[in-house]
Structures are given as structure tokens and as C-alpha cells.
Image 1 (cartoon, rainbow, N blue to C red):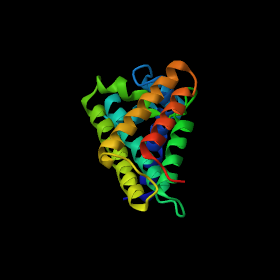
Image 2 (cartoon, rainbow, N blue to C red):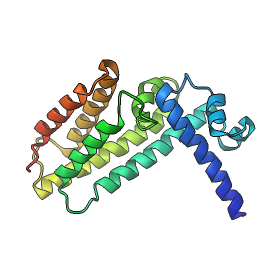
Image 3 (cartoon, rainbow, N blue to C red):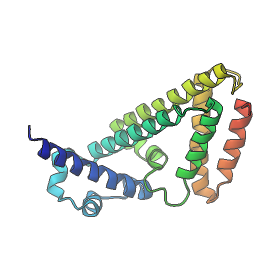
Image 4 (cartoon, rainbow, N blue to C red):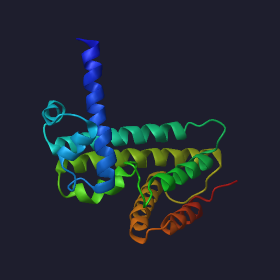
Length: 201
């Protein structure tokens, strides 16, 4: 196998995905045609089908790529040395508030932007969303469990149930900030989160 050719092929695929994430993160999946993505990426349309069988397959890959990067960021954040799990979770939700903006999120809020839209359009894309969000909830649950063990958090119920509630709370807040066009829903979500977790400082 030619390593240079393989690397070039990977670069083209990554460019298409990164461009699609940025544009579709702003406009949505259905509103964006492949021509717009490929023109912005500087890739001929014929090359697209070398990497993706259809727009739906592209959407599935787009979500998988997004969640892979998102979960890697979570893993790095929850491994930060010299911090309690309460501090790491606080940093996670602060980063959420910064990235899931009601303004231009530059593709950082792809799950929020596409979640409701594509879940009804495509079974494969819904499965990618389900798998990715399950990974987020699992990491939150493990962080909550570790926080209870290091004494920095105190909460009722299981870490798994609380992690799911927190994710749903913040997902809803992300939608609300786009409706009201200000950060108040995030402020409310953060206040509720701290009430639920009773962090020791």
C-alpha cells in the first residue's frame, strides 16, 4: 500500500467531514446540499462518492467523527491531574456553555443542531446519535462515581440515572438558548447541576 496515497485519501475525507461539520452545524443537515460542502472543501463531487455512498452515509460518518472527538475531549478533561472530579465536572459544563452557543458554534454543537432533525430522517444517523450520546452519559456516570468516591460530590440516586438527567438537562438548555437568544438557560442549568451534585469546595 502506498502510504502517501493513503495519507492523501485520509486528508481529503477529513477535509470533507470537517467542512460538513462546520456548515451543517450552522445550517442543519437537510438545508445543506452536498455541492455546498464540496465547494467549500475544494473537493470535486465525483470524489465524494469514493468516500461516502450517499448523503445519509456522510451524515452517519459526520456524527461518528464528531462524537469520537467529543469523547476524546471528555477523556482528557476527566484525566486532568490535581483536580477533584467536582472541579473537572464544573469545567466540563463550563466548556459546554462556551461551545454550545446560540451564536455561531462552528460545528461544535452538532449533536444539538442535528439531534431532533435527523433522528426522524435516518435510522442509521439516529443510531450514531444514540451511540454517541450513550458514550457521553457513560463518561458522566463514571465521573460522578469517582466524585462520590473522592468526597468532592454528594448526590442521591445512582450515578447512571443522574448522568442521564444531567445530560438531558443540558441538552434542553442548549435548545432553549437558541430560542431565547441569551445564556440564561445555561445559568439555570448550572445552578440546578450544582444543587444536584452538592460539590464540596
